[in-house]
Length: 165
Image 1 (cartoon, rainbow, N blue to C red):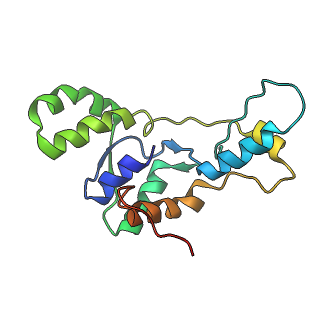
Image 2 (spheres, rainbow, N blue to C red; image 1 turned 90 degrees about the horizontal axis):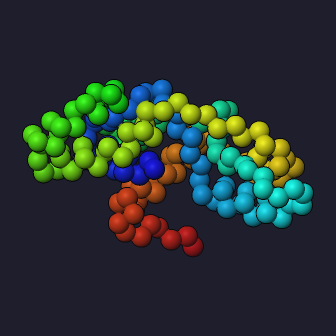
């Protein structure tokens, strides 16, 4: 979910449809895999639902991630455009923009809800089920720099990353 916005940000586009205080509740896939593998082995009633996410304690805001990305890429921070304004500008974007700018603004439409909401997920049930293990969601900022390094090193997934010896 964060890859495309980071990609255009790293390449110099500074405008983002979103709210600085929007909640970015993302976790690395290895946490989800480990948690699912552990949870599926548990006995008890079936049909339990678990929010495998950072939760209120470990999520970050869009502004925090934007600041970290601007420091990492050595560029100016993002400028956030109110989502309502971005939505109202769609007819003008469709009619009066061209080329790269039009592609960025048109593609950015699908990310507007993600970069605008303040949704918190209750992770208490998942944390209780994972208690006593070493499986825990890291704070978003704790693994975000690794995401940025990987994105840079692989040109946002276009080439293979460094192999481990």
